[in-house]
Image (cartoon, rainbow over the protein chains, first blue to last red):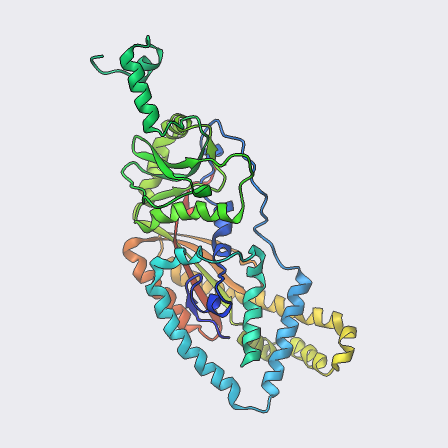
Amino acid sequence: MTGPIAQQTSGTSYSQQRGSSGSGLADVVDLILEKGLVIDVYARVSLVGIEILTVDVRIVVASVDTYLRFAEACNRLDIAHDGTSQGLPQMIDSMQESGAKKKTKGALAGAQERIKETFGGSDEEEDEKDKQPARRRSKKEEDE
Amino acid sequence: MTGPETPQATRQGPVVAGDQAREQANQEQAGQEQQVPQYVYGVTSAEAKLAEDVVGLDDKPVSLVVHGRCAAVVGDLPQGRPLGERADLLAHQRVLDALVHAGTVVLPFRFGAALTSREAVKSELLETNGERLAEVLDQLQGRVELRVKGTYVQENVLRELLSDDPEIAELNQRLREIPPEAADAAYYDRVRLGELIANAMRNRRDHDGQQILQALASLAERTVARTPVREEDVVDASFLVDQDRRAEFEQAVEAIAKDGADRVRLRLIGPLPPYDFVPEGT
């Protein structure tokens, strides 16, 4: 609920909310490892046999965990609805709207910077991309 | 020594003082590391200039091996350890990214390409494939890859699901009435609720994702759509966009993002090296 509607890979709200780290490499790691020209297919060459660490790009959170996460989010959602404060959801909405607009603009204007920022991130684990955004949002909701 | 010499003549002919001097000069030119295995980051055009401060794997310098219309972007291969750590992936991307941001066309190689020497890069990669590579570079000239990822705004889409799907609403209501101390007993019901939600989200995304794709595909030369990994992901697609239309494309992303701000959060990633738009080997 608190993220911008459009943003660069990092350097905007997500990474700021979480301190210095970003989810940058997660956004391109599949391309680096699975796309791009493959040299030994394209050319008949004397390749150097190099050992590549096996990296499972498609780390998916186990389904059950995902399901429980949704159930939990749903449960929390209801609590917010039944809360005594009528004004709260509306307040969040309006905050989100204004925040989102600002960030969208800044994000797209700064397109050139994007990848530099992406890779300026810290040592976030690849698989965290699967869990973090939702958790971050949930946290933020609680805080508000 | 007078007259033009072919490389062959140099190598096979009798070694005289002039040849030796020239050979040595060549060695020095190549940093005396002609036999060091070379990691290949990608291929760019022969006229490309590398930024001086860009370093590759293990912060080693990056250089070009030029032949004909193409130049391979290479650097010494780190020895004695397997590649693939986070820093390695970042280095690979950093080198290619520097070219993209300088407006230089580049054909990104998949992570992990290496040849036995600079000479091998020239003779085996560039001499034999130079024409094909040059053609691909021509096609990619002036174009960049932009990746768009969309994720549902979870809270709002959950609300939609609760109001649209009686089964979800009912189960959610029932679970809410279970006191916290009995929550363990309802474990499988919670899993079931999450599963229903996940399935409903996937159904929704087919429609929502398609709309976003269609709106953007017309502004791109080519489009590659991926199946999103997570249930709450709506769209994940790469677009090959002409530089002249990039502003237009980004405005379109922005417009879609604004229109659907309450439901879908869009992110634009790039410009990226055109990973998705190089020829695929068979």
